[in-house]
Length: 321
Image 1 (spheres, helix red, strand yellow):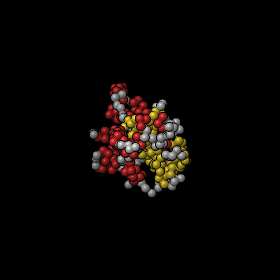
Image 2 (cartoon, helix red, strand yellow; image 1 turned 90 degrees about the vertical axis):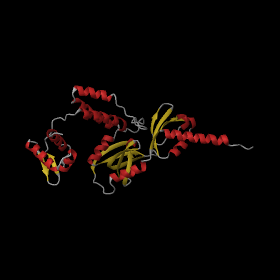
Image 3 (tube, one colour; image 1 turned 180 degrees about the vertical axis):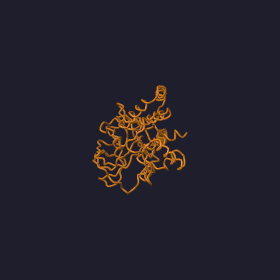
């Protein structure tokens, strides 16, 4: 990177935070602290209003803004790739916000770059096994992620109506600590004032959500990193599964609220995660020919093995009269 490009990059980086440490700039651009000091001084001599605080770092004086940022083709391409992932794992609110941002990016590209972006867009597909963002249950809007992100950033208390696995609705006041994607869904991790402890809320099980505007203080109980580590350890063996049930074999019974369900008319497509493939295989055997396993292959193979064992058992049995 030549010096002009480096100075521009440093200036952009300074505008991403309130205060930026010299060490952070050095690490990001792979240079010495001495070079950082020299480059910042050059920017100041060029008229950029950069302030500094001993022990804290550099900052851009309020009121100064760069002209609109221009994107390279590679940077724009990366946004297309990110957009494909957003389509699969984000809720409606995030998809709308991302598409709005992508639209603005496209508006500053050259005609050739726009054409290239369109070609790339039509030639990238993402297959996320066992996951769909098409929520067919209108009781759960599934459009709260943007509001949740805002509350996490501002440390504001959320009030939400939440439905647990048993289908019971409760109102909670939650101090959001962060969000976490695992087991095919986004989860809000936060301090629940009702339960007086950290709790895990699936975002697609929230019926209503309101930001109270109340700012909460940090809690020195357990770090979010430690909480995530425990969740990961408990779920690292989980595997997604997709099974289609004939409605007639369900006899009107509902599947677990932890499954993502799609109504297919006379059938239901269920997506869930499993940690005990043998248990799930034996459970599915109860429904006989009324189930079809889409994935994973290991589940289909285990059901086949159990069916063959059952067949062999009865074929070899002799009935005495």
